[in-house]
Amino acid sequence: MEEEKKKEYSPGLEGIIAGKTGICEIDPERATLTYRGYDIRDLAVKSTYEETAYLLLYGELPTAGKLKEFSDTLRSERAVPGEVVDLYRRAPQKSHSMDLLRTGISLSALYDPEVWDDSIDANYRKAARIIAKMPTLAALGYRLAHRKKPIEPRDDLSAAENFLYMMRGSEPEGPAGRIFDSSLIIYAEHEYNASSFSALVTISTRSDIYSGIVSAVGTLKGPLHGGANEEVMKMLLDIGSVEKAEAWIMDKLAKKQRIMGFGHRVYKHGDTRAPILKEASLEICKFENYCRWHDISLKVEEVVKREKGLLPNVDYFAASVYYLLGLPLETYTPIFAMARSAGWCSHIIEQLSDNRLIRPTSEYTGKRGLKYVPLGEREGGQKAA
Image (cartoon, rainbow, N blue to C red):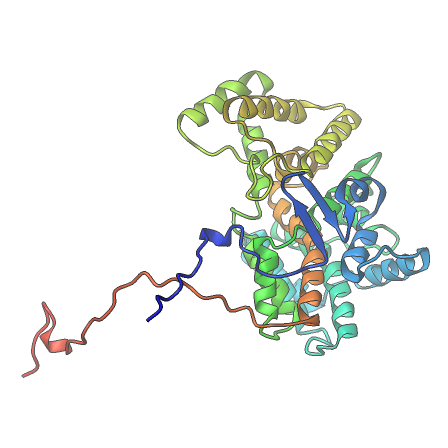
């Protein structure tokens, strides 16, 4: 009898091709990232978040007319149901920002008249609503959790400008809006990352698009996926000055503790997105005339590269960028989520276009051939009278 072929196993599914996509390509050897064939460096500098979201969803860059139509749709869908606002008001003050975001999306689904319409056109419309509402939910959750008055979204600002306005109550000045917009483009998509894959698993059961997004947000909440930029900023704040940086890092390395913001599962020769945010960090610090956090970041980068050979990933310089934009640390992961919503929706729609239930197998490592022993006869048990 021919011996059964052993199943392949890769911890964390590393290197396993789990599907085909025309949305995003990562080339780890060349350290490149493309959305629908366009280099992320071109998009981050030349495009807008709205244009990039359209590209991800529809597979091509929009004409001026199509972009205006899409942008107008997003602006008109920014408001969230009053019931969501009421729920946020009643939530415990110390609620996690990602829990609020996840709950807000889930509740918003109940008020979407097309939630169970599985047609392609309806899914595109629902994707636009989700992308439009995510920044409002993120800003609303933060402000209400801190007992601040909510700021209504405006329809005369871009997605990036409007979020900064809802968070701070004033329009961004100088390069702030453009730099934040560039960061949203950079975070918008990244192939089969954990949150995108969880959305695909959910939607492959023919669930609805909101359920897929809720799964993705729940996955992104985990510190091994989202939240790294928040931890980077906590590190910079703890270091406090350039003079203390090297000793701080050497102490952590001596204790074999992880330095957040370095290395990447996919990129082995450097994260192609990191240099874009490094330049943004320098630009915003010069505009603000306050380069303390950027300078500490450079020193830490130098020491970690020298001692461990590791390069910064996308989250590393995002930390100082967001901090100089006046954004609270607890909003960093919700910002990641609102940017990535365009990628999540794109993967969901792509999956539904040629769906197959995602159901991998496993390698069993437990016991075999055990015989059932009645309860009263088991060791330590008592026989029935």
